[in-house]
Image (cartoon, helix red, strand yellow):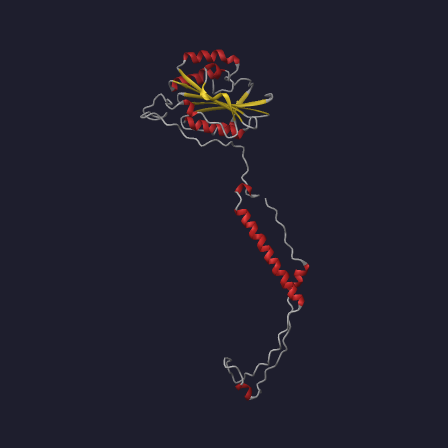
Length: 312
């Protein structure tokens, strides 16, 4: 907030406020005034039988030096204050809102993502959740449905938005889950996996994997029976111990998509991890965020919400 300074009138200026006035001598008008005086009145003065000529006004007194000096000082003060006020107004109007004290928009922790848009589809191909697409298939290039990295982030060269192997995807989970999950993927109609990862300046590491099956039935079976994605006792990301449901993700909803969010509980060592599983038709997403000292809520919610919308 801007500081306000009380402006006090100097003692000399307060004295100058009181003007020096001279009282005019009182002259009594008498009804017995000579008749000749009536003929000498100014023509614009209304004549009445009782009116008499007003006495001549005394000569005007010259203002004292004290009054003149006070007026000069007040004039100078007005000019200076006016100039300062105009300069301040011009300075504020030429500044950005975030530069004006008291009007700045406080950073709430969100990341600056590029403008997002859905990729174009081949001609006459429906989007998921529309009539004629009972398998809820994403016909768009899966790599173009990946959320891009935010401004200032360093992209992982191994997870740069392209295709990745099954082994790379399974490395995101604890090793005990690897064998069972790989067998489940071999028995399902897996099509391909795309991934992107980055690290922001605050040390948060984000990984997004999109796994696409041939239909919603295969994706749902892998999510429920292999991953047990809806339970905090299901398969956790690699290195994660105990976990609970992440309440911050409960209100992140996109029609027809299913989302399960979790956060690692203490003691979690140097880093804490948050993650979600999103099922969007034939595609299953895994989003993880890890950060030393604790994964932050706001960027996690933002990342999950945006990726969820791209899949919806």
